[in-house]
Image (cartoon, rainbow, N blue to C red; front, side, top):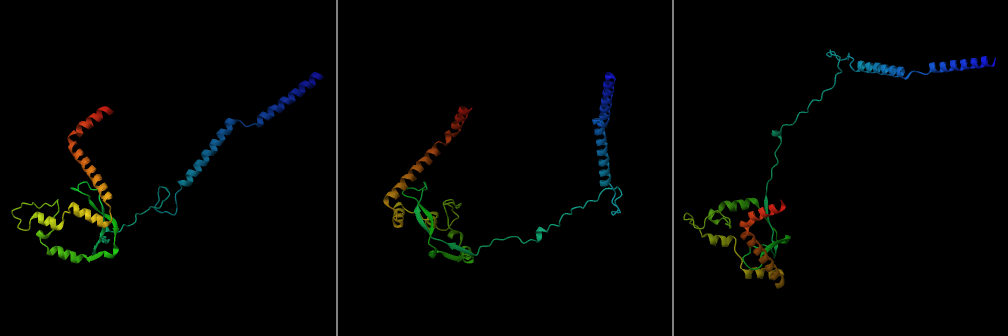
Length: 228
């Protein structure tokens, strides 16, 4: 009897386990069902997107009508007023005289213009008056600089000499005159001498650079050979 009872109990437990196994869903079947459901949903979404719009009478393909962005009309550039610049007056300022550093000065201290100026002595002249004054002058009265294209020994030129015009329009200041101007501006003798020494050194460097121009290709080739 004991063995029979054990066999019945074993059969009952096996039956219960079989029932439990039947209740557990198969993973493969579940995945296939989910994929089928997803495909049906995708088909429904596609049908909704591609469904024909009854409001659009001319839409025969069933495509959804989208609004089109039309370019805005650009204004014509020819109608725009072009900006213009006009000058009405000429202002003349008198700046302070300072020690310069230009090495092309022949001898003595070079002169330069500072940033400070006296607004009380500023002059304003209408541009029309300056234009009339220029038109009334002939070519012989025009200012001539060092880089003028007018040759000094031109036989057709019957006006004043080139040097007299140049000296009257752009006069050369002697060394003593420049020293007097700087002394009147408040500079001391030591400051003037220091400026003269620095200008002389710069002049010597320029002359040395000019004399060594022929050797520059050789120096470049030597530097390239050393670096290479």
